[in-house]
Image (cartoon, rainbow, N blue to C red; front, side):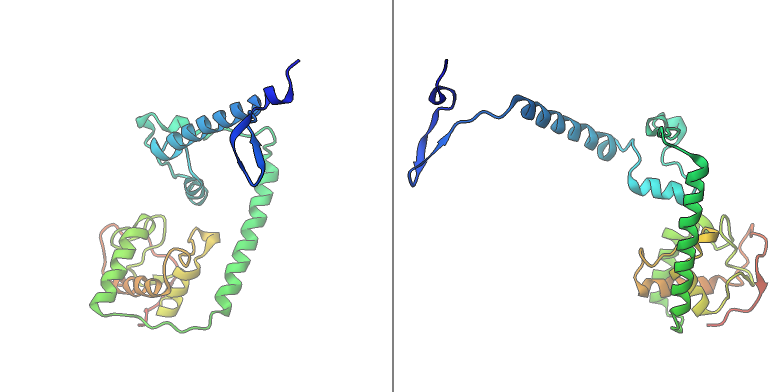
Length: 226
C-alpha cells in the first residue's frame, strides 16, 4: 500500500513553513476541460470564422423580416443553419399567443413613449446635415423604402400621401419610435438623436421628387412642412 507521501510528493519549495503537495487533477475534470476547449474552437469556427450558423443578430433579423436569409440557398450553407428545427416542446399555438402578447406590450410601450415626447423637431436643411442624413438613409432605409424613397416593403416617401403625418416632428418620431405593429422598427437604439433628426430632414427632401416605379399612395394627402 502506497503512503500519502508517495502518492502526493511534496514540491521542492516552501513558503513560511508551508509546503505544497503535487496533487494530480481528477481525470474526469481534465477530459471535461479538453472537451470544452475543443467545443469552443468548433463554436468559434462555425459561427464566427465560417459564419455558417445564425447568431443572435441574425435570429433577430429573421424575426423582424420573415424573408430574411443570410445565405443564398445556392451557396449550400443555408442548410447548415437548421432553420426547420423545432424543440420537443414546440407548441405553435402557445408560442403564437406568447408572441402576440409580447407584441401588444411592445406596441403599448412605444405608444406611451411617443405620447410623452412633447418635443418639437426642426429640420436641418443645410448641405452638411442633409449629406449625413442621405448616407444614413442609404445605409438603413432603402431596403424598405427604396433608394429614391419610392417605396417597397415600406410606404412611398416621395409622394404627398402620408400615413403618420408629414411634418418634421411626426417624421422624426416615426423614425425614433417606429411602428412595430406595422413593421417599422424604432431606430433610437441604432442612431444618435442628431442622426435621427438628420435622416428625418433628408426624408422631407424626397417629397415631390417623383421617382420611377413609385409605390401606390398610402395614407392621407397632406403637404409636409419644414
